[in-house]
Image 1 (cartoon, rainbow, N blue to C red):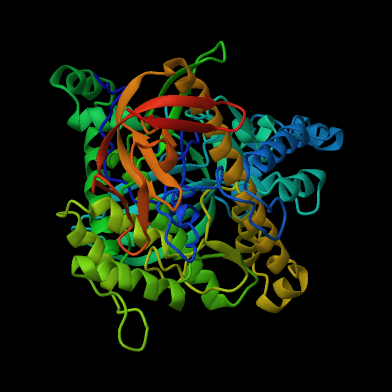
Image 2 (image 1 turned 180 degrees about the vertical axis):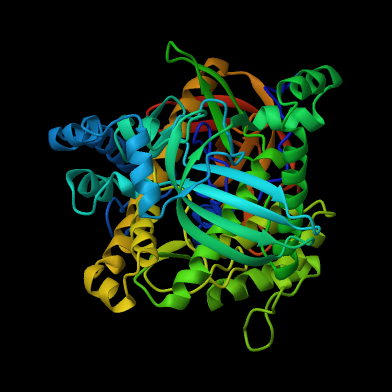
Length: 573
């Protein structure tokens, strides 16, 4: 009898995020919407096939073919290049004091930094996160609204422009998160030390304080340098179980967070309002499982399963999105050099391909001129939630879209339905955030746009190189996870499982097991001659007439699981 392994409930996520940062901080960094969008090929392929197809040519740093051999070479190079920091970089990091003295804080306050140490600031993150970029605060304003504070580590206070630390951070571009290790952008003295917003420690921050009305609409804001002291931390699981866990667990957590339950409840409410505002303007929500690999202290893979996303993840996500949009709008209006996060609408050919495919489900996303019908895609995704073809329609929509990229020009973010967007909230682990922090602080100090344009002439190159570094990190993270998943599944060779068709190609079916492990079932390993229909995205048996499509449940046997290539191959059970 076919079995199911480690089946978990995959809850609603704003696609956009789910990878690992302790097992996964995407969006504010966590909003990985655009990072998840895949380029559509001439014929839609509904799952990633890079480990099985012929090499594809590419450009830029770290790009090229995505064959398993190339991915392995890139991964080994990345691990080697980042095995340690250069001596000058490490020396500079070790020279930075790990405590803020009263004298240092006093001098900064006299210079204009605001003292917010009496404000209740909380960090919400994964249970094992060490590099904490962000804290949040929320206070009722007495008239039905709130003051929402997003407090981001002031990394630029320590990483000076063109210093050894800065040059190495630029070269790395981003931290890389694997299930069992992190390749940080900055040395641990900063990433886990003086820059990390640890509970009970005075820390310099860059604060965005936003005024929200009773509907969650931002009516005003301030941006300023601050000094904070995080009052408490709560992880995603604790936050979720505090309100949605079993009774005994709720009671335990209510005692532990007795002084903060009201604040956490209000944060949940405000985040829901913010999400509804985004949904109403056309922001896209996708629901896709991502793989979480749990590795023990001995290096053995203990479990593979879908990442669970709850309202707790989305609370911090909504607050980070609000800060990113606020900062982007403010500095785009000033006309200073800046790095934005852009996500384009689907290109015409991909839009028309999407329109042709989804028409058979009763949807139309392009008009007669081949232009996108405003609001058509989010309406389609919302209606699809009630249909058995939901995953298929979501995947088609996602496949039609391009990648989000960094740019020195502000062109908007299609997936978020944001006219202006940037990445501001993760300077410990993303270089574009660190870059704009410097511009923001110099602007706050009175620097004129003309002066900043003369000083920051490298925004275009920094944006392009950061985009390439991000892609390189994504490929490495994904391949490393695939390798560990294949290693784990190799213990089940020859066993039967029930899985779901997650992709239909010209050469086989991609099957995802209930623990999110995915592999390929070649048509040649099926008991019939399969005919691929690229229009319907199905495969039909020539003799039996049996048709397989996206979302169908099938029984398969694990035929091979190769850790080196990260591939899993199935046979028909």
